[in-house]
Length: 541
Ligand code: FSO
Ligand code: SF4
Image 1: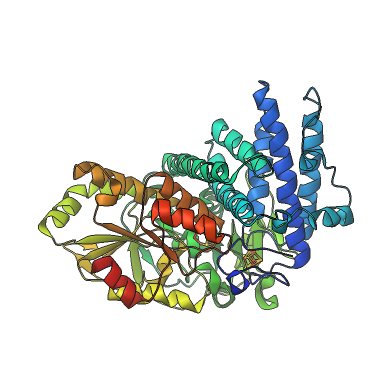
Image 2: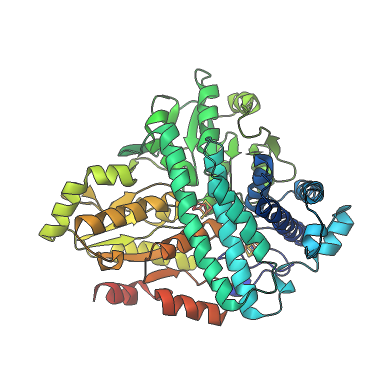
């Protein structure tokens, strides 16, 4: 196997024996094959569109589902991955009949999968290392990883009835282009930036979907303690799944708690009517081994990040949608269908209530609408000098010890700075009690990683209010943490919006070749991180 798609890859080079995430070589190979087959499908759909044919929404869903299923910590189930490969090749074959001829199609578009062994044999020749040139390989996979993140966001919008045909066409065309040997390095750089632009579209689409369905996030206090009734813990990012779970648990005597990236669900007005929607339990994804254990009740994983479960609580893990793990129960349901969570509810009733691991509360809900409602206060604080700088610390959390940097950095920030955050990175500092500036909390949580879009909207609005020509003239610095591929699309989207001087850590991606990293440094002044003290000096003088 060779996988280097996430921040925790071995030695910041690549996982070759077994993933740090727990992914086994066979699973990695099936994911390689799935991406390859999906690129082939993209090639055929792109040709069909070019000749004026319409492509079914089901095909778009197959593509986004495939990409999402290969994101870090999403699907570890070989049977599901192999089935998806076969379905994808079958769909490609069927669509090929709509083309006048197959001339010039790549092997990916002509591949017919076969049994598991045939899929694995093909996988061995189509992974990351199949591209010999360092820079071409780097750009092809940077783009592919960005598309995986974009697919996740498109999928979340789709379940709420928002779908952008142009975005799906872009994803499929771009996937196909990562197989195109005629593209030069500058053309691939350009395609990377185009991917970032489409990323902005995807994030705006999801923002409209979420706020359209559930209202605009608003300032909310979220309880960190537990009640005395049994509970269901919901993790991942899918708000529609949460909605269905809340509806079905109402009046059953079972409470619902959020974990990890589901925390910001509490900020949406639509979910506040459920008195059994208790609070948030625990921290970021990587602490689930202890926290799922002590939760005592069933856990629903709606998306990544799933850590291979311990036997002691594996029977309490339920997956849905693109998440999968062999031996864990899976709740089925296509887009638009009502999922049946009765098994979880019955299971919860047999479990003791969660064990309390902390008490108190945190405050969040500072997505763009809420922050703009406070704009006068914020602008006044900036003008008076009460707020000197905003520090965007969005992104992901992870296991690496070096991530204590973010806690230390947040603690050591000058008291006249405000942190703007989104994503699970926040767990490194959202319980530090950093205080407020004239009533404005010093940690403003906009939501999930996809809500990083909110931070961009806020920045663009502030630029307008202050009458600036360039978003980089604002008193905002960017110190972003990344882990998996959704963070890649967030980064590319920020670059597309013209944001420069982003610091990215705890390490730069292994999939950036020295030359590609150089392009990002020269064009966007991207940098890594050093120590909290040195970086504070660099940021604040
Ligand atoms: Fe975190 Fe995992 Fe949201 Fe990621 S839970 S790490 S970027 O999946 O998606 O921030
Ligand atoms: Fe390694 Fe990350 Fe790939 Fe898992 S997803 S195999 S940890 S690079």
